[in-house]
Length: 182
Image 1: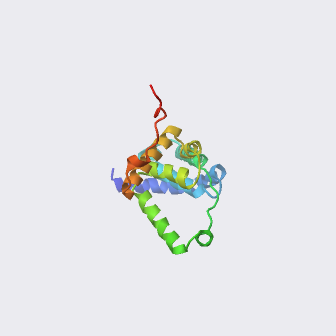
Image 2: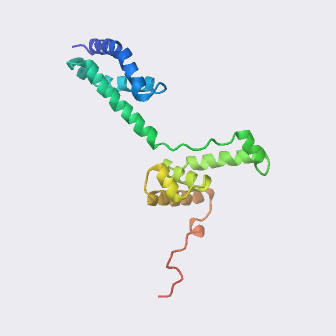
């Protein structure tokens, strides 16, 4: 069987199911997410079109895929942490000490330095050092153990010090046993 003919049959079948799937997606995911859910369902089913075409009840098969996609979307949304809206750039510049141009240059430098870090390390530095979260709070936001955030942050700060030309050893944290006579 020609692959193009199979794709046309799949598209025709899915287009026939589309209005019914969309109505169900509105009930499952809400009106704002229904189109995304149906689109993700199409992409999921299009990976193996022969399964939908060969199923005795194509609507039931597509609906099950829609439920799975909707559940995945819900899981992703439930893991996201909503943060308060940041102030507008103009408000930050006016409220900052110093002139707005030097503040903007400092922001660009911070973005450049954070861009040199792996994503996990940059996220740890942003949350703990710039946004003021505790390591426990940052771990909860990132969905990892607090030790992972602590170690990522430590490695990031070491790399940032090296990139800035400072000696990493100069800012070394004291060992808890340092200075204890044994």
